[in-house]
Structures are given as C-alpha cells and as structure tokens.
Image (tube, rainbow, N blue to C red):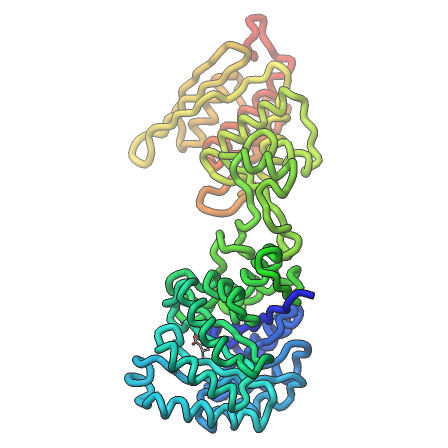
Length: 510
Ligand code: KIV
Ligand code: ZN
C-alpha cells in the first residue's frame, strides 16, 4: 500500500489572511462543509484567539463539520492555547497548531526574544496544548531564513514535549526546491530518531511562484503532510494551492508514490465557492481550476482533442468537476466548427458548411470568441438565403455627427457586383436606402430590433427587421459585432425575399 499524503487545508486561516478577505462565520462554515466534501484530511478553521469572530467560526466548525480533523492556530502564549482548546471543544477530531518564529530577524525585530526564550516558549506551549489534545502541530515560523541547526533543535524539543506533526514553513516564499529539501532532510533526521510516528509537513508561500514546486519537492524528502489553500489564496502572493497538490500527486502517482484521500470531483465546486465568498477571482489560466485549464483554442489542438482528449489533456476534466471546452475563435479550424454544429444538431450541405465556416472565421477574427448562440445565428442567417440571392460584399460608411451620413454598399450575385451609394438621416438609414437602391426595390421599414447575443464590449448582436414592399411584408435577420453591418445584412436578407419571382430579363432583381 502506498503512503498516505495528508492534505491540510488552511483556506480558512492563512487563506483568509489574504488582503481584503473577511469571511463571516456563516461563510466559513459553508466552506468547511465543502472542504469536508472534498475530503481533505485537516481543516485549519482559523486562529481562535485572533478575534471573537474567528473564535466563533472555529467553534461552529468544530461542532458542525464531520470528517476531517479540525485545527486552529495558536501562538505560544498560554491564553492562545487555552482559547484554541476551548474553540475546538465540540470537534470529534481536533488539533492545536502552535507556532513561534526561529529566524534571527523575527526573534530580534518582532518578538524581542532570545533563541533560548523562543525554545522555552515552544516547549511550554506544546506541553500546554497536550493537556487538551493528543494531536499537536508545531511550526517554526520563517524556518527557511533561520539557522537550520536551531530549527532542528527547536523542532526536536517540540517533539520531546509531545508534538505529533512538525511543519516546516517557508513563511516568506524564499526557498528553492533544493535548499528546501536539504532543510527538511535535516529536520526530519533530527526529529524522527526514536519518534517514527512524527509527521513532517510543509507550508509554503508563493512570493517567488515556487510554493507548489517546493511543497512537492518535500515529498521525496519524507514529508507526508502538505498545507495549502484553495485557489492558492493567502498572505501576499498566497499559499501552495491545495487543488494543485491534490492533482499533481494523483496525476503523477508514478512519480510521487503517495496517495490522497480527496474526492477530486469536488475540486471545481470548492474553488468556485471560495472565489465567490472571498471575492477573489480565479485567474483564467490557473492550473486545474482556471476557466481555461481545459479550454482548447488553436485549430491543431482542437483537432487533436476532438479525436482523442488525451492528445492535449493530462487530467480528465471530469475528475476535477470541469469539462473540456472547445473555444470557437479565430484559431479554430473546420474540425471544431463541424463539431460545434454536430453538438447543436445542425447538419449542412458542403456548400452551406463552407459559406457558414467562412462567415464564422471572418467574425471570429474581429470578435475573438464565438458562442454557441453566435454559431446558431450565423448558420440561420447563411441558410436563410434563396437561390440567386444577392450577397453582401462590402459596406463603407462616411460622415457622422457634423456631416450627412453616407453609405456605399456592394452586393454580388454570381459573378456580378453592384455598388450603390446613398445618404440618410443616420448610418443605418443611409445603408438601408443604399441596399434598396442596389436591389431596385423601395421598401418601408415597419419593425427593427437589435438583440445582443453575447456580452462584452464587442458583443455580437442579431438584427431582425420587417419591411413592407407593396402590400407584402418580408423579414430579414443579420448577425454582426457591428450594428450597422448587422442591419445591412438583415436588409439584404429581406430584399432577397422581396425579390423572389421579380427577376428581370437582364438577370438583376427587378
Ligand atoms: O507562513 C507561516 O509561517 C504560517 C505559520 C503560522 C504556519 O502561516
Ligand atoms: Zn503561512
């Protein structure tokens, strides 16, 4: 059987220390329930002595959340340890996490304590915590900038006083994998002698973007607990991201040789909940939980993924509660467009497919991403055509607020092109008159509606119009990111309908 890697989640303690986050006790309880569903092993629910709100949240989580061990942080002050124990009273599985700093800069500048005083405070606090709970964790804060001999000495003293987990924090994100492993190996060697059950843990910050790498490197040095926060939130640049650790060791079990008990399918839901309640967005390209983590944009990648997902995906998106997304954009090819049509239940003849695809590429070049509604609208417009219809080739608009708006519209049918120019009392009006002139048909506009079908500054819109020609009405529909172009397309569609059966002997619509 493989070694178990303990996932210690500190979203509710270190994660909440991220600037601007203030979770209410209700929010914290909701996140704790979700973390229990994710089946992390330990939930650090807060820092009980830090505020009345945190005490309440820790105490509610201790009473209400079943499954994981519930932990709370405590300085070495006797009162902190007592409050931690008090807040954890209701938990069936509980841990007190004691910490004090071991780096020179922290001891001299912040604590104003000598190394001997720090060591004594740790021994006393661990012993005190042990009076309340069996499970006590100790962390030498700023370990990676501390004298390794002193870190090992204090950790050994903590273990002798009863600590069952020794957590080595890279508090300021200073370590690199190699020196972090060297420090851990030393501490491990020191504290483990005669105490085989002591668990070595890591807690890495991300100031140099190394938190996950440093944490993972520690597994080979014997670490069997990794601390992290969902979405990597936490002080400054944040913590190791819990979900990245879970997926790294699950995906590369062959490399790490450890297993985790997490229900990975709950990862995405947990990430979204934390993002929503903290107000911290998840960056689009964030590993595992980013909106683009399983999104494929280039034609080559899309082609590969549509044939076999594993050509470009090392994790099954369903395993983390996500799904693959084929982003239909300017880099997409025929394979992706065809796949989108299949998913929409649309079958096209070759010639219609070609025309719709060309139109899609033109639009995507301007807009970037085209949604499913966008595809539907493009196809509907392209398919709305009639045999012998006129197609829009170009529109040129000039004039504006000070000058009379002028539109020049070029249409084609078979090999013939017709250009018509007209003025109007607005851009759309000028363009409508130009289209009617090109067809040689006078029409009265009786309905005009613009509906956005995608959001954002460059949203696509559908323009629907109804025109009256003589006693008959005709509908037209146009899609574009530009309202004038959408309107012209709608008018061309309506005019094509009006022109049915009215083709003159010279072949031009009458
Ligand atoms: O970063 C740190 O050192 C901590 C400790 C309290 C574990 O958060
Ligand atoms: Zn921290």
